Amino acid sequence: MFMRKDIFDNYLIKLREFLEADDFRAIDYSLEYIYATVPEKERSEMEDILQEVTLYSELREKEYKDAALDLIKVFEGTLSGKE
Image (tube, rainbow, N blue to C red; front, side, top):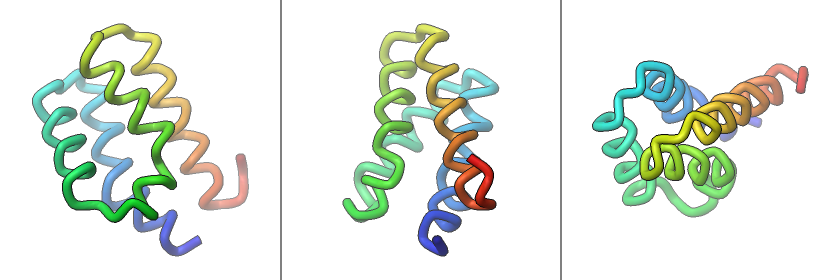
């Protein structure tokens, strides 16, 4: 549980902000940083989100942004026990 909260606090809050702002430079930088520095075990906890964010970054289609934001919301809900 603690690890998931760290993932949310350290990565997903910022990714959500960047998605909401359509800040593609920050999205790309964040993805590069996460894939280069975050251990596989932690990355696997947010893999579905990272895939949607990557698709949005590459294709710029709103459906991927919405899916990523929804997944982040679900992830956040699991931290407090309300999924």
